[in-house]
Length: 73
Image 1 (cartoon, rainbow, N blue to C red):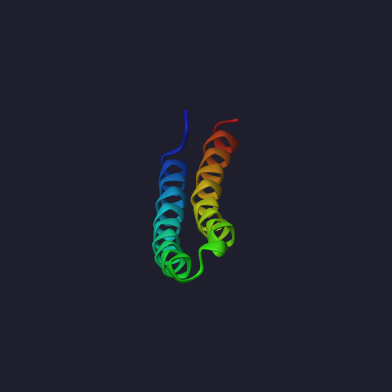
Image 2: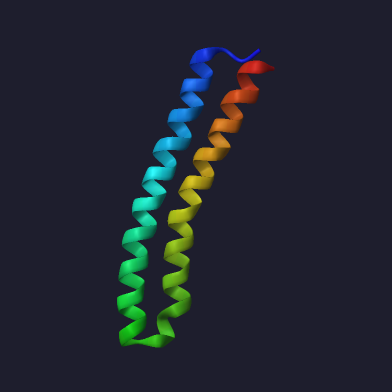
């Protein structure tokens, strides 16, 4: 059985990572749309910035999985 504080820690890890990723995607997405409107050849570079912001949320999920299975094992 997983300890209750581990569940809280996993929830906080996913929550803050998703919040930060959402803010990052919002800011990078808005800036990339403006850049693409002016110069369409920068599409691939702006897509990379959005992917980096999304990776933060995925890392938070990975940390939550490590917390849950590390404490239970």
